[in-house]
Length: 313
Image (cartoon, rainbow, N blue to C red; front, side, top):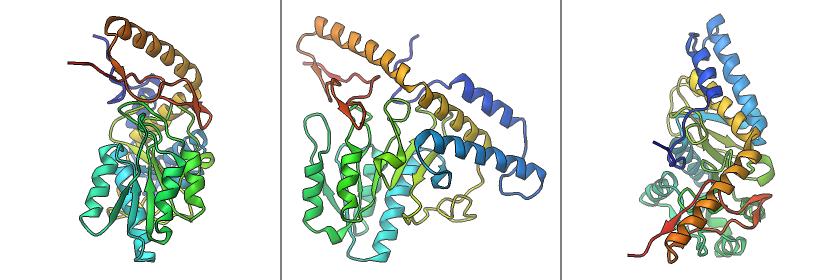
């Protein structure tokens, strides 16, 4: 059987398996002060530094979580709570209607508790444009708590111009969160360069383990925690750190980012061949999302491994 649904999950990379296997043979709580704990802490911090280097972040900005869904919830809810607490006028969340449900459901949950959602219109490809965001902010800039727009769409593969969008939000001091779960290893992802206040990613979409993710949170952005109990990750996220999964995540991030250009070219060629053959067999099939022939923020305008069709009937 050929497995093709890498948008859902990916096979683990040999480097990630090797890193995890080695870590699983060692015992230690990264919060402990004895030798085993210090050894575990060293492994975690080396992984944090490697991920930060690969994703253009500071090590202190990388927060480990239990996966992409937790990272998205932590960013959206935590930043909203912090901003609203600082200024009760900040009740508005600007969000695209085509976000992953980890974001959509978090936004709806906040709306049920007093937040106001302003939906950002998307074009026929599912992309949010800078002028759309600017118009939404201009209605009442002081009322905006945060904006959230995914870097790359998990269904149709369209890449958003996050750098342009953060330029707009920065003019008003509004933090923007971007879900980069599908983007890491597929398109250029640099936390510092795109200017996002918060960026989320997960292990199992890039050849790493399931059940571990990360939130790259800018140091000047306040984020209230979802859970309490130890404050292991900057007092933003509590819980004993899963050292084997974290080192597996770091290995997957490094391999995916370092090999991105070559792998993206290979996948794009296969995708285009698939699209051409489908169209030859089903001429009226609709190819959804960005055509993938232009660039966004220095990378392809569509995820190289994504092909999404609507078939008549």
